[in-house]
View 1 (cartoon, rainbow, N blue to C red):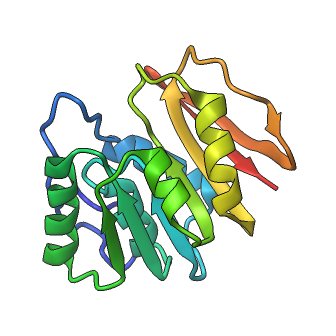
View 2 (view 1 turned 90 degrees about the vertical axis):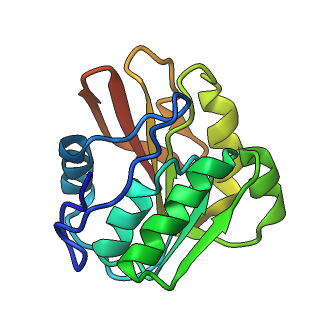
Amino acid sequence: MRIIAGRLRHRIIKMTNLETTRETQDKVRQAIFTMLGTYFDGGKCLDLFAGSGAMAIEAYSRGFDSIYMNDINKNALMVCKDNCNSLGIKDAYFYNMDYKEFVNSTNELFDMIILDPPYRMNQIDEILESVYKLLSFKGMIVFEMDKNSIYPKEYNDLKIYKNKEYGIKRVVVYKR
């Protein structure tokens, strides 16, 4: 797996190779970031179900100042750390918690929140509700889910900015 664009373009990162983790393929990551805006002018990015950290690292490569990666699986989090270390990323923060525990333990606000929970979780409304308070005023939520999932068309002041299908997955982007 590789980073698609930005200052870390073409650099290789490790995959988790865990049965519990789905890596976002290069071409899907590229499509997602193309629809979000190719490059960003700073900010904080949270990858709440990080896996290998590929999405957060891609965001960092494209201009985010800092990335926060959380995964309940210690082995997945070790891959995130290894990937950031091999790429020389200094502004990366790692958490090994259940997503609810992380959300309740931080006071940070994020400009991008990436959500790619296990499809079997299928608690889209609950997850969206829990992370809403962590979203900065100009922030966006990128939610990857099974393409057949039922999801809210809006939540509080968040509206769907983009909604695309990629094979078995759907990506819904919410913005204020």
